[in-house]
Picture 1 (cartoon, rainbow, N blue to C red):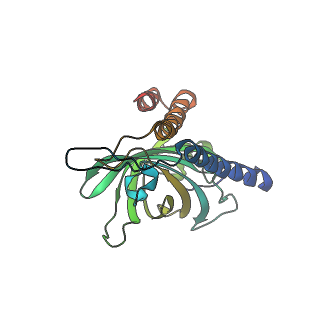
Picture 2: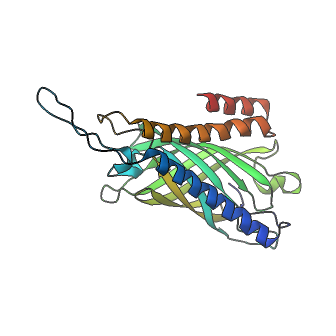
Picture 3: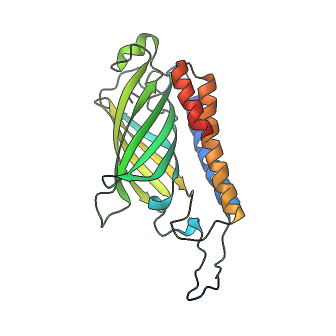
Length: 256
């Protein structure tokens, strides 16, 4: 993702205020999901030979495996070779969708990250990726790699990342993460520039296969989460300075 930071011209208190607002938004979205979903009582259905109990997706024993929607923000950034123009509060807002699709033992995913780079420029990273949990005895631990288009390095900083002659550059970011219930943290490496620690929350989208249908409150919570994510994709497609082809791709994602 190149070097990540915040505009050096913004006062420290303002930068801290921006970071607090991101954290407040993240906490508010999570509280909304919790408030809308509510607990689901167990229910039995008479069948010819057996009964089955309805289980809420919020009660999944391994939510890091079954949840699909993920929101995270940055809590720490380190530059290996810092300069006076580098700052380490990038105000990251990262929305990620983890598909119910797997390959080579790993899970496919896609996402959009909005942040300020190391030179105070608003930047975006639209990506796809692959996540794998290689250790059976340590399933909350995972490794992830993403690849996509990075936009936002302009003017005198355009050549700070390679292949950025058009203003949109390819990027590949490896990371390692660990989850405790629905709270996850990742260590993200951005090339030879530095690293970033993130903190995020997961939200269920669907029940594990074979379980009963969600109740209305749960359906509404998931619907709200999905619409928030797609709405951000749509807003970015309409107001971003990307090329027409990139905007069309975002529009397709937001309406699917």
